Image (cartoon, rainbow, N blue to C red; front, side):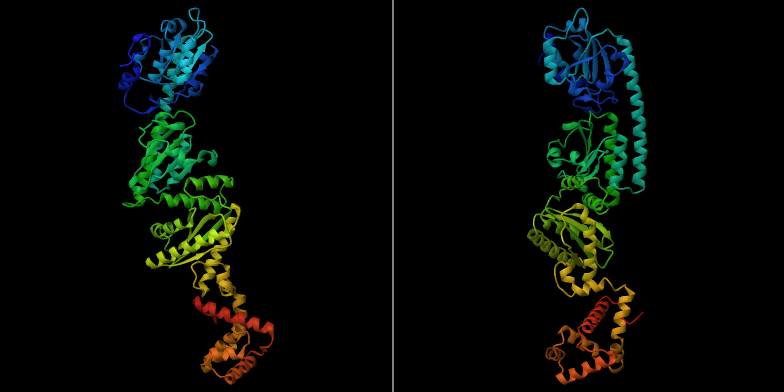
Length: 569
């Protein structure tokens, strides 16, 4: 066993053995939230003009108890978390090796040392201050005389009040979390409620340190999530409950069978006992909630996290683009490309947007998108995605691979998948309108005859555009008025006037090509063209007339493909 000041046994081992069971932080029992900094602000101490000589960075150490008097053997009586109040005369008796005494106090995990300078000790020993500064032990000198009993009473009264408040807060938190679980709240609802009660940011991550949910407590997400995966990987996964790692983080491990990792409290100061208990409660509530939603299955928290980010983009529910980029990066998606590429996937039959189907179909295919993608359901059977790319060539290659994967997986699941892609955008604020455009392309693709892996405006063509206008009564009425005489004649005589007109216009009036495709003689075609002109009272040599009739025949074909009755009003 090593020895400390005056040849006494070092407390480093024995203090650990004496510690009561419970929660610890930096080796110190978590108290009721009273810190050295708050203690120095008590009127009973403020009048003595306290001067912080060392350990200013640790003034937020929690104070569990007030220990009056410094003796060379005091370290053998400490449990950790004590703030030692001493006179100069008492401290002087702890010499001459004041540096060793400071190191022993730190090893005993005391919260700090306050010394009232007097005639016996007019200034703090230099080697004590130096040693305390090295180990981070707060050392405070008082220049005026104080009443130790008054300070002790005020501090212990404040600690007792804090303990009462903490117990009430924990009880309230239990009730709130139970109610949220009973009503089927989301993970984000739990984090928001718990984070608000704890007064600090919360992060839920998976086993790969990707962020699943965030409560930012009003702080910038860019700062909270900067280099998240790297910072989180530095925090050990086997911390004891209430034992913070780097940056004063408290962690609570979650059920890995669900695909969840840890719930992390990002405390700005040394966490309190109440915060530690609340963190454990919230972690258990998340596990209960996810087990209830997906019994025997992995959690959908990963897809929900990305869906929430994309939903915020679509509804413009963010303060600055950098906050979205930070959240996306922390969830494993890099949106910092020169081009933002929205995608819409439509699954038929509709209603096939259950999380399991979406995860089985879209999730694995999204890996093909290079920098990853955010995904969010829009309507039953329809999903939006957002990815980024550095160049036009790159995104076209990635989309082609992604779309083929989606279509292939859809066929295996008995689904027909339509992938629609508008022109990429360069600004985050342009994404919502681009997704609307992608949905129009997906709708238009229903009338397209092009067999492609993904659709753009170029592939849907005029039939696709007209498919978007089938609900316009005036357009239907106009097309119906133009073709109705031919339709009526065909129905009466089992003729092919409409088919002949369509083929004639498709060949831009070339009678040789039309007759060949219709498998009729040129004379028969000539007779049919004259009949069409007579019934419609038009000349097919007129360019505007041909354009109008071509539009009407395309409209007729589109409505037939969509199962609509062209003749009904």
